[in-house]
Image 1 (spheres, rainbow, N blue to C red):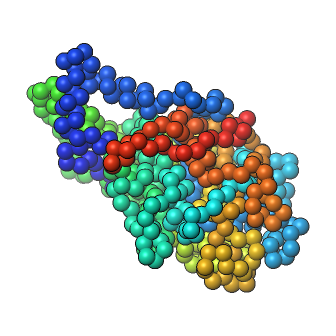
Image 2: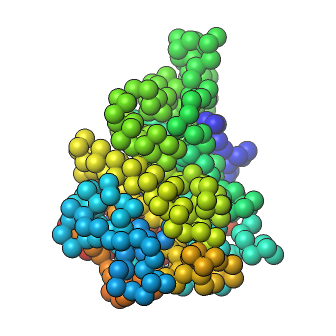
Length: 481
């Protein structure tokens, strides 16, 4: 739901009221509060050390997060010449991009590969952790977790967590129109009972949390928090805003500056958001032709991808579409975590949904001209073990099951100047490790920041007022054409 954030005695950036009063007093020496805030904004977007290729070509981002860890060999990186206990049941098919082959379970995406790059060398070595939550946290924040529960899973979300990249982006580059800056749908990041880890604004504060749209977009959608109550007209809401302005006018100058920066801006954004109706309309799939909805797929993932396109079109800066299943859920129902069974669920359940939703999203963005300024990334927290039936994480696996595999997997990236119909990196003959150009997941985050015109090494201060970089990695300029 939409809330007016902020904690008592502090602003959304973590500065205390006393600190702001002290800064405001600097105006006596010729430096105003506005000057300081303007300098802070410029510092936050410092680009003195940035490489130029691909810099600032994106206005928005869609992250298709395939939580659970889909098998790279059975989807993106087929190995037809590998032994049978590696290559699996699926055959490769040609795509419309020369030299790129996909698995036969992705026929629609095969017709859209001329719009994207496959990174077939994503790789990292886990620091003693093979569980989903730790890998998800790293992918979302760019940092490894620092606390693990006795069960081996991470602890629940905490206010001192490192912020999700979407929260950092919505802070540094808020939308240019009255619109939700960061939306996460249609369910939380989750492994067992650990819900939402890596999916919050952490030490930035709740002001920068995403709008959590945890509903099934393939069913009837309720948007009570984005809709005016029947007994409150637009005129009445506008009168409330005017009254608040009159109160502000009577405040001392420094107090007014603090209020305007800390809380008033959020009230105004909330008023503008509800009055404009942009967010409410973006979630309204009844405005889409049936043939478009059918193309995306009449299922949770497909309709969620369609909402993602509508949100970007309406001005949202960062949309995260999570695979609508618990990371370690039942593969025969909805999950990518295919320990117990791999080929049946991929062929009959997961890949048809992924194929329709992702291919339609790329096609739709391209046809509307939005792909030029929207970065699309599709990735899981890791891949699956090349050999069938083996244990790599301590989990039991069926003879046709694949275990967790962070050492080599695939990401798809498209839009905002990314090369079209290309491959970056290469896996070895069995998809076990990178053979060329290994890419750490944090480099993908650095590339996202870079594409938005944000220096990945921009400093942010945590809950202890310690300086931290957005991400300690370099972007990959070679991805851009």
